[in-house]
Length: 299
Image 1 (cartoon, rainbow, N blue to C red):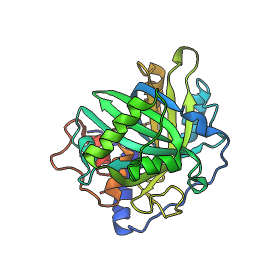
Image 2: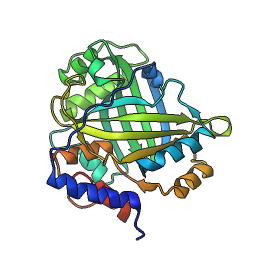
Image 3: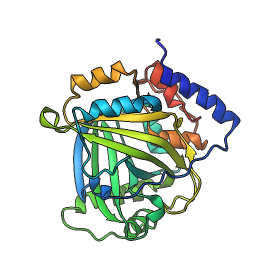
């Protein structure tokens, strides 16, 4: 199968990482300017998603070509905004294995912060989100609540007061936590640039995630604990999201600048980076060879 420069870089980084496991990352500083509003208080949507790896030195070209046909996220500051997620799973990592083994229906529960982790307090708004995959369609449901309330609900099993419109989602999460005994496992974080479609491309969204990192301890968002890269820092993760179909000009653009299609999960990368699980028990049949290489990225 034809090689790719980005995947070659990924292999080289894995070899170096094995020799230097102490590699770490400090959160990228940027000034918040309203990007917390990128997620609504109660939001649900279905999308098709395609992920790519791209060498950072090619990002300026991608950014310029996207800007020529798309708008910037109106709530995103210059240079992007920090996103940090805390993932919940079972003691035996059920959600992790569902992804690795390629189940057609799978889901995960996460707590997401838009903004600087160091600034997070009990009053900071965060998103509690269920993300699930049904065949090729990604579905997300989430509510926005204060961080302290979210931790009390998810970690200490406290009852969460909610509105009538939120009750169905709150009951589902409460049942999921109780039945599966979910607990916080790892965080992931990155600096995200976002572009939104206009005119004929309404519903299209392209994000570029830089310096993807994570940790497996001191999981409070504002703990200040050291993170580790879970994707080589010279590679950006590009996600193309569309409600119905991805426009041809976007896929042509991706091919023209040598972007590598991957089926990579930031959550799985973080689990593997800290040796919480091996890559797979039986393999993932839906992965092609190149994506298979990426799936082992942090083992």
